[in-house]
Amino acid sequence: MSTASQNTPAFDDNTVRLARDAQQERLVSFGFVLPCLLIVLICVIIPCAWLFWLSAFGADGTLSLENYERLTASASYTRIFITTFQVSLATVVLCVLIGVPFGAFINQLPARQQTWFLVAILLPFWTSLLVRAYAWLVLLQRTGMVNSTLISLGIIESPLPLAFNAFATVLGMVHIMLPIFLLPVLGAMRSIDPAVMRASASMGASRSYTFRRVFLPLAAPGITAGAILVFVMSLGFYVTPAILGGGNVTVVSMRIARSLSNYANWGAASALGVVLLVFTALLFAFSYALQAWLRAPGKAVANA
Image (cartoon, helix red, strand yellow):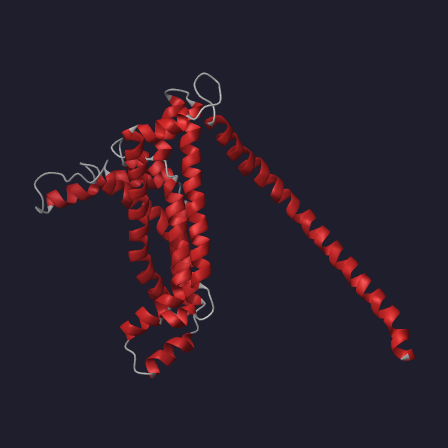
């Protein structure tokens, strides 16, 4: 008992010292994070709050919901939102249909070849969005390379309407968003233990069955994260729809720019931005809930 009583003060002092060191580490970590928090506050939170504030005032400068009432009463705004979601959803679907098989192909390659494919995937990031949009316009317009080649080969008699429509817009957006989709997908696929695939094959499962019931459920978190990321980013696209759509595809970002440049209506533009921001926040919340569900213990095994 005497030995225990003698060791107790030293143990208490050590506990206090460890708690003090932990508190100092937290303060140091907060000091490193503080500049980032200030940047987020200045560049994100304050501008978003400013949007909410502007959208709450009517044309006469008084507090009013007329900007939001205009969104619900006008059929043109409804069509713009529908077009925006249709274009974004089509971009996601094509990215999934192209990116998942392509990611699975890259994942089964040797490490050296995977590196070269990753370099090829990241290479488009070195080119401006504006340059890529005009490059597609050169290819798809009536006198572009695609129509000229098809006419010279005798496949078609007159140019096809490949540019200045939803097709060109989605094609250009898929070209831009596919590398962004592939990055989380490849990360999820590379984390799958190859022994799981071999175990499935050793139990008599075919390659297609293993891919559908084992590989895809394990890669589902990465596919979901990539799809949500592509969808959210596609909602705010401006350059690609403006160039490749040719005015025939109007999305929310283009309507916001028009409200400011033509009418200087900050209230209406802010209301559009707020609605788009709310949709984005809801999508992120849905993504978080879906990711938590997919990563639940035994979920992938149960689905398989």
